[in-house]
Amino acid sequence: MKTIILIILSSILGTKDKTKSLAGYWTGTGEQIDGKKWEVVLHIKDDSSIEISYPSFPCSGNWTFEKSAGNLYIFKEKIIEGADICDQGCEAHVQKMDKKRLKVTYYLRSYDPHRPIAEVFLQKKQKTK
Image (cartoon, rainbow, N blue to C red):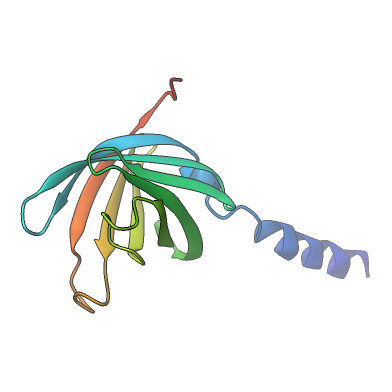
């Protein structure tokens, strides 16, 4: 009986904070399919606190964790400030390249259901005030 309870607790606790390995403050320059470039700042605290900003536009919002498979994490983006400037409802597919680098591929399914609209490589940084 103890073993069954431990297994159940492990599975419940194991589902919490699936983005822990991505936690940190990340920055980089994104590039759209039309060649335009823009700054990206991503701050992942935990599954419930993922902030994204695009200082070049400017706009910002948050990501909601959707699912993961291996080293691929999928998030849904919601732009809160500057929603009239930035696309709403992008999917962000994040691949952890190593401890200091992430690759983010953006999909806007209403624009193209299969091909990405942008890509960015992010570097892990120390957050400054």
